[in-house]
Image 1 (tube, one colour):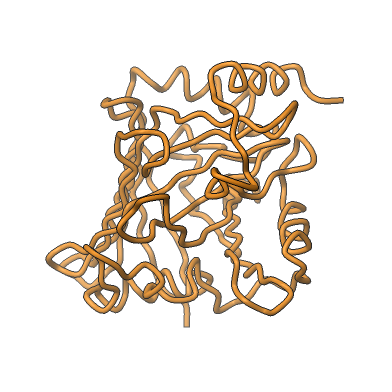
Image 2: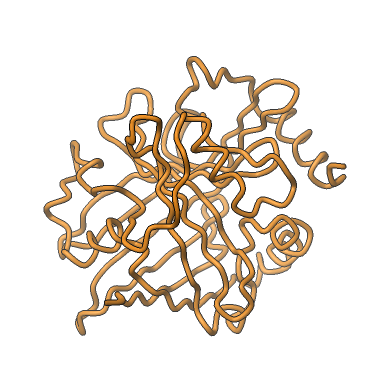
Length: 279
């Protein structure tokens, strides 16, 4: 039986969103969904089967993208990236993460409510609310999703809290070009029951070889965040959630990431990652 909160949220997005055709004009929003309220990792096998493929084991050398060159286009060239930054995205499973989090006092109550009512229950988008939640770091597992011809479709990246094993995020990562866009974006889809949350991130290379990923303000069909509901038809809504990731190598040669999440134009959450490659 679907949870009343999930039914209510899907009704809200159907009412505030627009009808879309995920097999037609809005195919760029076609992404994995979960068949149950608890997301877990079952969606990964379902997604592989949807593309005619068979899911293998998590790959200890897999990356979020098969090559950063899939993002090459106007304004982005993978060969300008610092080798460590590129290695992280192409061999993500080999990297360990230590995480620090800091919420804006204004948004912390809403974040705590969402985490308690949705995130922890469905084991998806369960953002860490307190610094101690991530004091022991995160573990990650990357599973390539390939179609019947063995072509890479996406990478499933599941992150769990090292101390408790609780799932924080589980998403599908790929490169996808939006209608009318000059080049590809990083596409991240977080499956939910009968829908998903998707983010399209515009890539660029900083002067020192770092990677900048941004989901700015814009119109429907441009980089940004979207909620998709596949229930009583197909609906999608652009949401005022904006993110910036800055992946860089510090003066001591350590790979780090600054991640800011904003609602509208106001900073809600900042995360900092220290990344270390395992041999």
